[in-house]
Length: 453
Ligand code: PA5
Image (cartoon, rainbow, N blue to C red; front, side, top):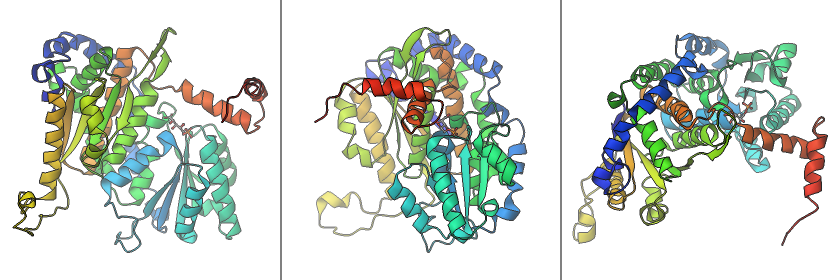
């Protein structure tokens, strides 16, 4: 199971910040926040009540195995989890041409509408052997739909059939994608009504692409179920999720407005990206649940160890005291290198000889954590015994539950994103979509004042 070390997060070691007794004296608040979350029976928890979603995805095997490339067309919660699973659970060179994939697919993510990205991805694919998974809960997000239309046209021009090369993952009742799938007989998989984008990685949204590349989705699901058992307990001191949620909440109240996640592992880096969206979009809110203006949230930042020690750590150590840092540590890497004993006569290199790269990386993590603590920057470390599907499943549920619990502590709705919706509507207006004339007019009027250089 994942391990949690909070030793460097308290006044007792930092000589400043939150004391352990301040934390424990608020523990009831965290427990009741968790109870509120569990009572509301959120969709991301219902997904784990049985393994029907795993069976549904595994049943796609027959048609899926005729493909070599799997492309996710989606954005935000409909793509970040897929990218994180791909990066964490497949070798980093999985998509390389010569890599032996044992008949499983390469996985690509088409999320942005940058024409150069789309062009290079299309060039990379063997179209006749490619399945495109269009993922959109609403079935109408501009970026995903534009990319779908481009790819669909490309498929047609190459004399290929849409029904063979597309599978949609969308709301089973409504939206444009659902409508197209129904009328044309395109395969589709459901996103349950009560599962929102950024909480959907353990639904068909994240599982189909993972399954296509041979990730053990049963183990992922088992790890998540185990995580639910461990992190939904209302015993504060034995539940690291409650400790971490309350820690972040209380530090936010002390103006630690930034939450950094810093994996010391390239494979885990995109999990920090996934976390960044979950924390930002769920908790960054103008109104509380009663409609009072509160403009709350904690800005999530991702950094990569050891690389960002040479970029960010100066600021974290000596800049404003506005951060709480979470390190992700890997105890056992699937590959390792012993540093060769060369240049024995060069004194400044000799300490490296015979050590493993993993030992250097994890010593750098420990060194950075201790240096931060010397500077009074609260930090904690989450350790993966190894990076496998079970522990990644456990990690996902840990953060889903923690985000929902933090939402209850902050008294905001963690499942909506009105701030994103506004930007989407203005984009529709600017692109000339029917029904958005009043918005278009409002922004055209604003356009009368400009300061451009
Ligand atoms: O978490 C969310 O709800 C969002 O990030 C959505 O996933 C994103 O906006 C894409 O929406 P959709 O899945 O409807 O295309």
